[in-house]
Image (cartoon, rainbow, N blue to C red; front, side, top):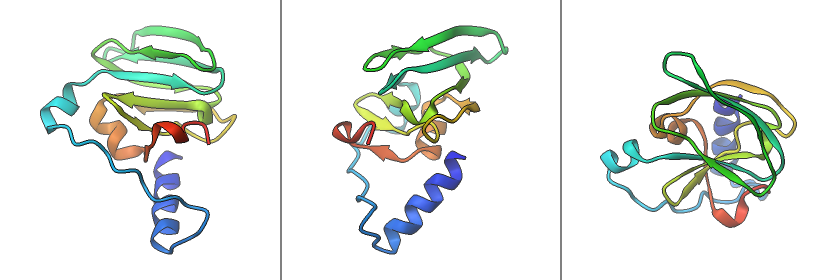
Length: 130
């Protein structure tokens, strides 16, 4: 569960655990710029993804191969993803994730930029896939 993972991450960070790196400083975007930004799925390893729009219609279903990305059209509502530990979200020049644990399947992941920012930790580009 991404929310539980984030809470654990924050707790370990507060306790000064040597296994938890500090959160990278995020580039500040104005709230309206962030909310309107495109969401790009970034795969560090092959990850199967199903993307639904707000009406529930499947807009994309397939594998995003390792080292590639896929920008989502505006108005996408949720994704379901396999190998979620390999899937990250890019919004502008910021990265968040991963979408779940390595090899796990996650569903009903909200795709608005604000929901991603609130649900997943920020990740430095050089730390993607670690």
